[in-house]
Image (cartoon, rainbow, N blue to C red):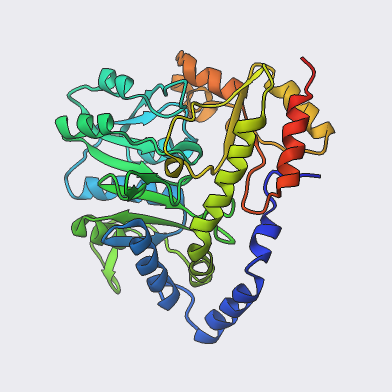
Length: 368
């Protein structure tokens, strides 16, 4: 059996260091907002290339806290429009609606599956105040054209970097391109904890201070509350685990790129396409390897019979979900096509060449 993602194997590489980290945290007697969290924030901000990093409970909270902080700072108000890709994971949109802001769903470019700059321009109105750029599948969604649009229209830029740890745009890493970025350390991410975890990176000192307070019940001083905040903190154990894995992230991403190249060079089935690959190799860290097929469900069942596990990201687009029933009648055709055809193949730092070759052979033998 070829697992979609063998997390036990991924993390067993660091078992000795993780056992030591558990002992270190237990011996410290300090389990929240302690040395491990502070050290990880310092290390991660240096890695991303920003002045500030604030750990929090998960990626959704990171997105939500950024938008909430901008509202507290008077940069956004209820009802303001936030442009967001229509084909994103629902967390991107949940953060917007939780803050009573208005999501404007924009179609991706069908050849890259990333938000389309032309569609961003068409979506702009006087109420547009922010753009959420989502680096889906581990591919950099940023471009010089998007940067030009945001500068011309004075938009706040929030990056959803949950799937793109270590991804580059030129010499800069995603997570340092906008005014603020949200990061998820869900176990399956390129940089994954052994539970939930998240962070915000930014160069804005006021934003960083506001987010840190909001994430700690709205308090920057014990028992003194400036905001109606929430409890969203990265615990000491998860911070310690992330500190162990961060130095290996670049090497792990390189391994993902090797597997992706094998897939790109050798999958030849006529019913299968993948997104345009005309990008610098550093601008994609392959959190996922998505393929598109009109026979997606049939292909997934066929691969399962060959002992190959795959996943769909994501079977139902956000605008067709029950929780957003007011959008259910919208027609967003490119997004709907992607959600009907996308299938993610196994890819991880611990997938072997032999396993990748098995996947390729199985796909190429899928009956036409």
